[in-house]
Length: 602
Image 1 (cartoon, rainbow, N blue to C red):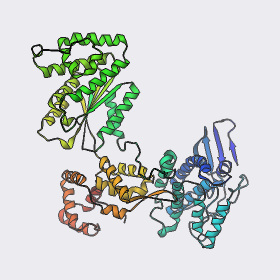
Image 2: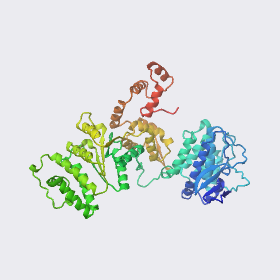
Image 3: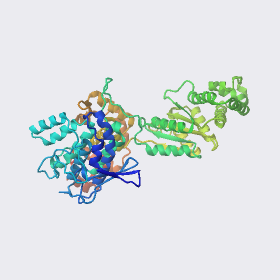
Image 4: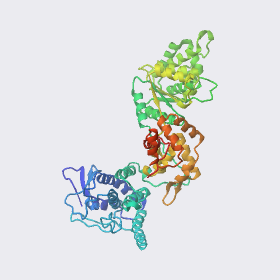
């Protein structure tokens, strides 16, 4: 049944049928008992999918699990292969649909322990699914068939539905719904023109879904959990589609020249969420301080309140962590650097009084000629001196487009004053859609980029791929199944994460996305979702984005808007393309990629 290499205890080769016999639970078919077996079988299933994917339609394929050898290295699945010299009644399948179904039969046997019942006479039924011919060098023990399986099988046979018999076995197997659905959609590939829309079109898609179940079982393998608390959609605490941006920001953190990042993006694009996550992780790794503040559109009565708040938090944290010697050193250096002007910053940053407990907070106007510049200078000195005696410091200023002129001046002075030996990093976030070209803030941003060592970073809306990733994981459904829904949601939200989440909640509340019981599964009414009105806030975003399209794409949209809400590309587009000199077919593909039109299957 299997043999181990005596010269290397790390390696093992075993016949797949023998492996199934050794690992398959024999008592009952509960999901609890099948879960450990499923987790061990999925890596083998992935390797089997790779074997089929790399076959060219002319190569021989295994007819059952008896004809497969599994190679292990250190208990991990390394590869699967077919031993040479095995006799096969039929060993070549050229049609890809039949090859997909062929793989489905092997995986069915792998996960259920028995081969599937198949229709006789069909081209795809190359093997008698109700029998396994044992080779002389292999031991075959069929999986124990429970009374529930036996009863369901007889009822299916009585109705003449052999395919429903396989479905019944899946339902009684104790396997998760997603895996049962995966196997059904593979077996359905042999139905030719009668296959369902969810049946697989390629080995790449099948292998991708297998890897999702293997690598992310909580989302794509486990069944949807229905709790007494309700059936609300729960989006994962995950940042989608920002891997490259995270890498760029982390490189800036490690760069000794860059003193910060200047992050722009429209409202709801996820600036705060992304930067807070990255900076918290960076602070945890390096032991840095991380403080943040958010400016409000309604100006604070105290114009320096936001800047003062981060410094107050810094002083209080430093007071808790610093030794007596460090505290004394900071107090001495601040007193020496600021003199009587230290009273100004003591009035603004109350937490500093704990470090300088016996310093007077009174100062006359005669002692301070230019209060604004003196305050800015005092903040710079405070930051530099504390930083010299503390852990690295990260300061984040959010929605800085609402900051007052004095706060903007202090922030630019802080960044400009931060030398290479000052272990401080600045994060400034602002809404690009709230900026007027000739405004005070616009000029400040331009000067900051020209004079300060900061890296401008722009955050855009999510791409259609990332929207589908979010939708797929939220609905615990394979991405290829959710793609049509995601295309519509992208078109209605423009990929804006905030709008997308609001739209999701609205669809759930209206019942357009709902749970189906037995087994629990998220479903949606795509026709009703297409017809819902787009909120005004999103419509404003769409109109603004239309203005940024290249002129040929704008003209293409104008043309198709005159042709109706649903049109066929050929031959209408061919005639229009020749008349106006624009390739309408290519334009539609690009507009679909940008989410302005939806290309329907066929």
